[in-house]
Amino acid sequence: MCLILVAWRGHPAYPCVIAANRDEFHARPAAPADWWQDQPRILAGRDLSAGGTWLGLTREGRFAALTNFRGAVRRDDAPSRGALVTDILRSRDCTSRILERLHEAGANYNGFNVIFSDGERLAVYESTLGKGRELAPGIYGLSNHLLDTPWPKVQNAKSALSTALKMLPDTSATLALLRDDRPAPDELLPRTGLSQEWERLVSSAFIRADDYGTRCSTVISIDRGGGASFEEWTWNAAGAEEGRKSYKFEISGRP
Image 1 (cartoon, rainbow, N blue to C red):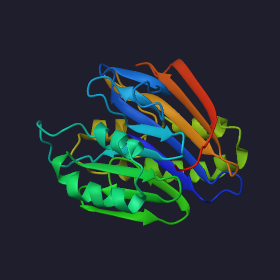
Image 2: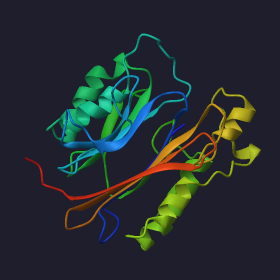
Image 3: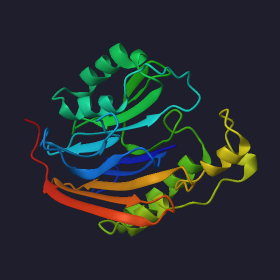
Image 4: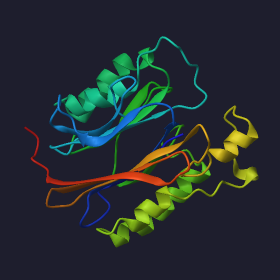
């Protein structure tokens, strides 16, 4: 049950900061973040089952990240939602045109949210509402419901990110909030159709379970001069680090 945080145009030196956890079954194969050989503008991990991705950044500063919507009706014949992120990263369109395309195609997929930027504007599309919109400067949190739904993990992580931003370029505090494995108190757990045991398990920012859990954590920052930093940590089933990737490059500007 993933978590995506975006601090947009709120820091004097870093106008874009993204912190995200990808939660998935441990058995689902994935490649760690790298520049894609078939799409050399894209820096992202890759789902090796369906070929798409959950989060990525391009050389022009375009990014996209996706979460599934918990509790939505699921169709087994729906296409992979990871293709939506790939399509946004490959696109040269502005956010308003991408929102139009998502509105046209969104019903073909199982429930999802996608937060993205064309490098100049930030937007979100929520398929269960069939609506999208551009977003003003601020700190946003997205898990497996609508943007800024006040689940404990979202509220706690947004608050922690506000503090962690003051420590940039040191990302240790940002990683620490993504590694927070404390469950929410039972009285604050959302009711989304899961058992209470599972609601408790997935209520923390970082999830540990035998078959399912946080597979990777990503911190992206783009400074005012156009310098981009992309850091990714991958975790094993016990929640221990099994790999790390780090990339730095200059945003080239929109072609």
